[in-house]
Image 1 (cartoon, rainbow, N blue to C red):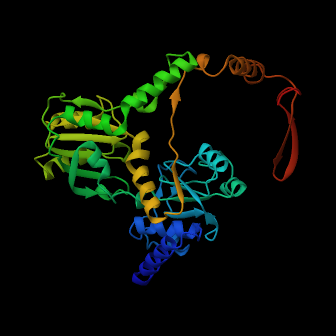
Image 2: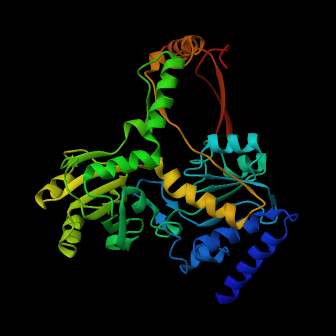
Amino acid sequence: MKNKSRTIKAALRQNKGAANTPATVRDVLYALDKITGGRCIKDIGDVFSGANPFVVSKSSNIPGKACMETPGLVYGNPEAPVAKIAVTMTLTECNIELAGATGVDAIIAHHPVAEAANTGGVTMRNYLDLYGIAVFELHEAFHGLHPGISFIHGHQPFHVEIAFGGIPGNILFVGQTLPHIHTLGDMLERLNHFMGIDEEWKMLYAERGSRCCNAIMETNVATGGKILLGSTDSPVNTIIHIFPHTGFTPDQLSLVKARFPQADTVLASISRVGEQHPLVSRARELGLNFIIGNSHAMEILENGMPLAMALKMLLPGVDVTLFRERITSTPVELAGTAAIREYATDIARRYLVNKPRKMRQVSREGGRKKTGTFGSDDAN
């Protein structure tokens, strides 16, 4: 491992010193391995040997939907040149299309990548080869590397676990508030400042005006910070920082409170809970404040931005860009242009609700061609 570490450092120094030498996919892997402290897969055997604790399978026992995390290079030619990198949270077909249109050679996704699910329903190899794109993932291999999420929320962690209760990804921070954070209100003001919530509102107002639709809503505006137990004046000193979507339970909250009796506030971020959630009820029983922080939609700034900056530092000859999603909600009867609404209504009425008689469909069952009818001959 020491020899491999020296090799990685030497490769990075060589790349940094050779401004005219193009970086490669392998260089990107070396950089990610340095950033994560050696957590990336360097050999295919690491996937199945059990030697890398960050190679984990995630499953809710829904048939056929398990996913294995393989931090490092997911797909791509290690010797392919890389002039431009995109850092994203979750790989989607929109990411791939934007990368293909803007000259991106490699996409680094924070979240794990699964065949078809992250590539528009088609096989990964065909889609990525079409545009010559390499793809990396990190996720659990990136968690716990920095205190930035806690810092943004106004506390300095003195206790960190990334697999609380033995559950991979069940992250727990316990932290002390920063010197200028005294109340829950201070925490909310800090979040709004760092995440640019005023800017998000301006963008939403602009879109509503441009599309002549005041019913449009956007994720970051809809999921801003919120106090569930306590008030803006409630004092805060020691924070239990949890992430509800990882499976953190009320009983685990009780265990943490018993272990750190000085804790006065529960902070839930990345994901959210409602006022009637069992975690909030347990926090009330334990005499704790409860505040909602940033949603998952902000992780591109909390984790993605530091990762992108680190890559820029390690690969100075490579352009690094941030792929940031912006998801909006619009009532269907007000969405799109008048032409597309007319189109959608016509298609729905003629082909989806009232089934026409004719349309030839060719399928294969048991290796034999089968022809059936399900629509009209003039359908596209």
